[in-house]
Length: 238
Image (cartoon, rainbow, N blue to C red; front, side, top):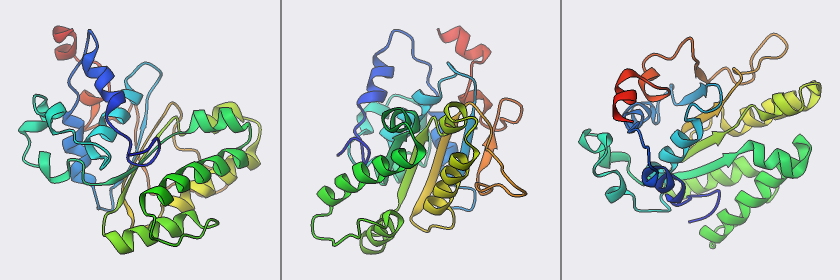
């Protein structure tokens, strides 16, 4: 159990303990259907206060091998689904909030350095007997997957902060997109990649560096619209 690698379920527990909690665990059944498929790259774009971080915390609590979450979810909607235990706490989860890293580092290169430094530190602690190359983060993940047969789920919150904070620095934006592409695209160790943000997937030049992602926006939310906003049913349960 770590901060970034296989976190516990503490953040989602806070949501469950709150005065108002709307059960959105039906989203988990949808993401389960995407695991280890060509459709496993999901980007959820919504304005602020639409529960993006809460959903990310929920998915972390459900998938992470760093905790036992069966009791936590046992009274929620997902527990009634046939896939509930199939994926429960079965994956190596890497949970990142890009806003935190960019704020600490100030530059995209510094943020990437911090991500790899902190995640690799937890990886080495978890897999003490493996010999990792410090300069090859994707290679380390490939090695873990090859030796353990347990893939990774990436949950990335505020993925678009680079475009909001460094809006004039197109070179930094391109380096960031290329980094995410190299980390995620065509990687067999990725079981699921779930990103949240305000802005749509950024394109530059003639192609999108992240063209493997399918975007669920406010205008194109089907079939997860009832899990990513407020519905009449939600209002009745508040």
